[in-house]
Image 1: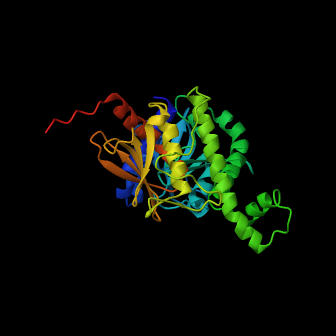
Image 2: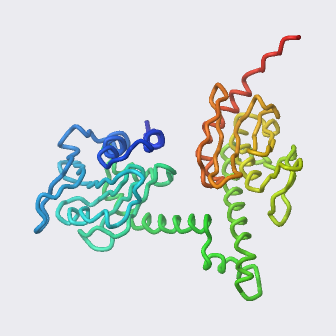
Image 3: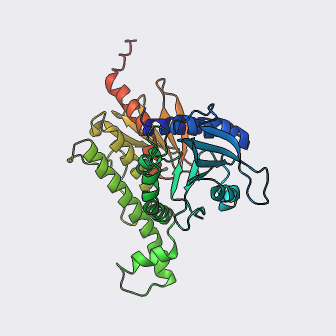
Length: 370
């Protein structure tokens, strides 16, 4: 397996088991050691490669231990400090990494909770660990652009010089991307002001801010969806694929972005329509897009194959504070997966494609005549 496949395998393992992990030690056994062995390729049972409870006395600090040291070419190259899964990582957690970084030959330090990995080096001052990581890898949402850099730390292709030469660029690109992601989810006043003043000639008052805040949020969501849809179309080699707003039985979205009422008590929101377009864009690699149909109900928004209730592709449970994506197994049993944004649906693309492919290849049995 290449590093992308190994990373996805660990991501799936974390997703399945992290709810049952309650201690730091369990986190190390369940997630950190598989990261070292499966993803990075080091033998966790070979003390010449992986040294648990690594000790390097620093000044007056005697007997302190760091969770793991990884050696390559006979020298300690990577230090790893682990915390309990689900605990947010803070710079305060890295105090031992700071001390050990200066006392060893290691140029790479990793702070992790088993799911998120903060990777540090010494860009700001020689032999002194930076306050900010140059690489942040989140196994709940893997950034594929970071995997080639992570591959340079693996046993088979270890290339410290290449990592360090790219670290400066990675550090700032990563920070900028995380800032953009935050602004796209919850725009700050400065971001709203920045965009508003480029399209609105009047004064930026509180009333104008309140008017443009939802417009900025809507525009950024639509921009992201359009970019993803364009990439999907290019990947499928079908530039002429059209992803229109569904016409059955969902009403079109009005300009002001308010919800539309369909069939009296059924309310269809723009977010549900966006979710439908995402699902259809994903599965159109397996089935014709015109066979993927939307059907809204009072409790969920359904995406069906051939407008057949017995062939559900997905359900969007968006009419609640916690959103869920409903996916189906081979027996059509539904599993609700919590999601935060419509874009999170792309993380379940393989499952959705498999569901659509099953329906495309199976003919429904003919019911016996009574």
